Amino acid sequence: MTMQELQELEDFFNNAGKQPVPIFLNDATEITDYELFLQSHIQPLKADIGAKVYQPLIHRLKMLKLLIESNA
Image 1 (spheres, one colour):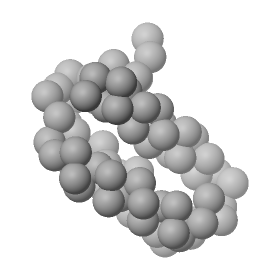
Image 2 (cartoon, rainbow, N blue to C red):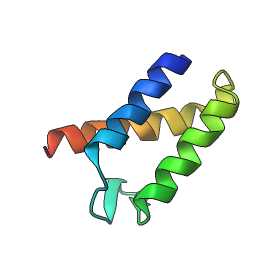
Image 3 (cartoon, rainbow, N blue to C red):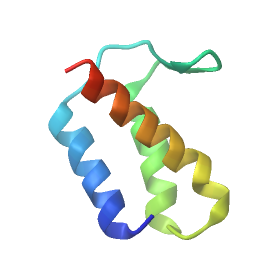
Image 4 (cartoon, one colour):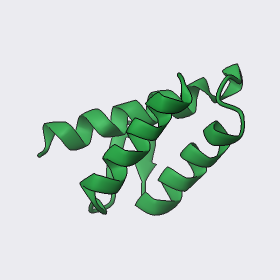
């Protein structure tokens, strides 16, 4: 993921507005605090976008984006 792609994701979430919780991404991932979820996923990526350890963060952000788009 590039910084531009991350910025596009962040812009999407900013434009989508606050989502009602809980949000279930899958059977094991429940979002109970939407803003904290976004902050805890986007901030580490901004700090080190190329780190492979953050791949799950990217995956969860993309899953959330798809879920929001499908419910729009």
